[in-house]
Image 1 (tube, rainbow, N blue to C red):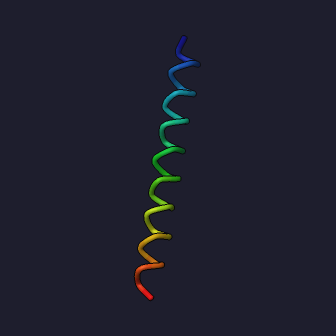
Image 2 (image 1 turned 60 degrees about the horizontal axis):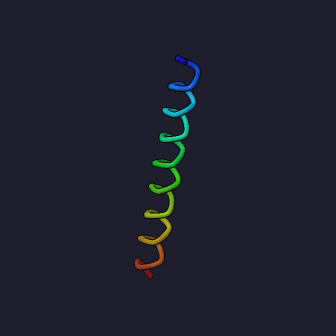
Amino acid sequence: MPNFVFWHVLNTKFRILCLYDAVLIILECFDW
């Protein structure tokens, strides 16, 4: 069970990081 929680947290962290990267890319595009 703790293993499942660990993977869930890891997945959420990766999702937030991907979202953050996407926002940065969009902001860079608007910076032109």
